[in-house]
Length: 130
Image 1 (tube, helix red, strand yellow):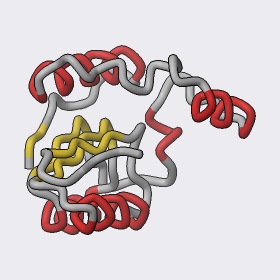
Image 2 (tube, rainbow, N blue to C red):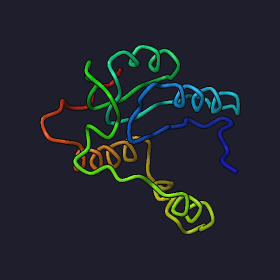
Image 3 (cartoon, one colour):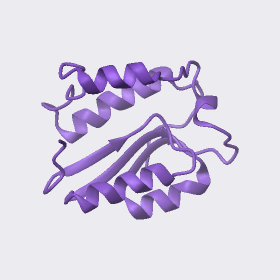
Image 4 (cartoon, one colour):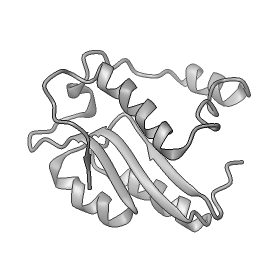
């Protein structure tokens, strides 16, 4: 079980489409006692920025375009994750889920941002904290 109580939580995703799943995750973390909840994503529609920013203690993103159809449109390569891959990660305690546990929040964010920048299509704006 993930322990949220009394901790700052950083919720990361490959992108936000409607924002409803992320809002549910923010509310879940708060209900479980998270001290603060931050959201970090590479891309989300411009019309969801305010809503997510109002729910979270902080929102960090690379790009928030007005014209948005799907998260995948902003990636050079965006393969779907199979059910088997998810089950394998959830079953395997050495899956890498805790890969950032020894890092500070700043180190976690910088490491994740570097990975996003390497896969996001070129030409987008730098990180925009909100």
